[in-house]
Length: 383
Image 1 (cartoon, rainbow, N blue to C red):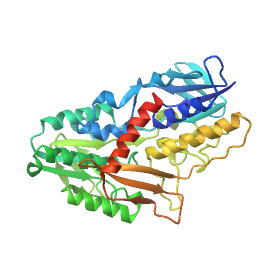
Image 2 (image 1 turned 45 degrees about the horizontal axis):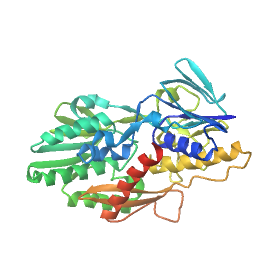
Image 3 (image 1 turned 90 degrees about the vertical axis):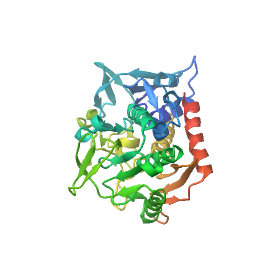
Image 4 (image 1 turned 30 degrees about the vertical axis):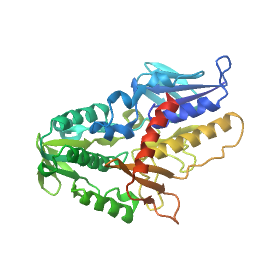
C-alpha cells in the first residue's frame, strides 16, 4: 500500500487530500492508499471569505471547519508542528515521530509576520483574529481615516486589499458615514494588481477612484505608530483604523530544508509541480513559478486548487503504474468583491502568450453570486 504525505491543510492541501481520497478506491474495509495530512491548526479557514468577515457579512463560524472533519477511510489528519522535512527520503517529523511516504505534497502556505509592530496598531485581515478585530472596531467607527496597507511584496490573494477597501466603503456608505470618512490604500505596487497587465490595473484603479477610495502606489512602509504610517518617500499618513497585509515568508521548516530555492520559496516544474526530488511536489502559495516575462506567478487560491487537482490525478496515475498525463496551465476564474452586492469577474491566462494575462469585466451581481457559491460549495464538498 502506497502512502501519500500532505503537508498543510489549507485550501490546496485539503483539495488534494479529498481528491486522492475520493478517487483512491478506499472503502471502510478496503484501503488502497494511505493519505496522511499534517496540520498544526485545529481550524481550516476559507480565507477568501475573510474580507466579508471584516465588514460583518459573515460570522466567524461560517467560514471555518474543524480540520479533523476531512478524515475518511485511509485519510488521517496528524495535528502538530512539522519539525523536519527530508525530501530525499520522503519523510517528515512531527512531535519527534517520523512518518515515511512514497509521495509527498508540500502545501504549507506562507508564514505571516507583522512588520514594524503593525499588529499593535492595526489588524492583520489575512487571519481570522485580525478580521474579527477589525470588524469589532468598524462597528464602533463614527468617522475618520481608514487605511488599508500592503506592508510588503509578494503577498497571497493579491485582490484582497482592494476587495477589503471596496467592502469597507460599501459598509461606510450604508452607515451614512461617507461624508465623515476617508478610505485610503497604501501599497508598494506601482499599479493595482500590476501582474494583471496595464488594462485590468487601470480599470481597477478607475473603479477605486469612482468609489472615492484614495490610492497611494509605490509606498513602502518604513515605520508605524499607534496612529501614523511612515513610508520610504518620507511621507507620513495618519489613520484612525488600520487593516494590513502581513509580510509573507516561506515557512521556517522549509527555509531550513533542501527544498528552498534561490528565490526563498520552493521552485517546481511549471507543468507538473514536481520539485527537484522525485515524487515530491509543492503547490499553492509556498511555490515560486517564474513566468516568461520574469515576474512570478501571483499567489492566487484558484491556482492552488487547480494545482492540487492535477497533482492528485497524476499521483493516482503513478500509483496505478500509469503515466502522469495532466499539466498545470495557469488558468482560472476568480471574483473580486466590489461592494453593493457585486463582484468583478476575472479570468487569468498566465501561460498563454496570445491572450491577456487577466481579463476583467465590470462588476455585476452574477459575479457576487458565483463567489458566494464557491464558498458554500467548497465547505460542503470538503467537510
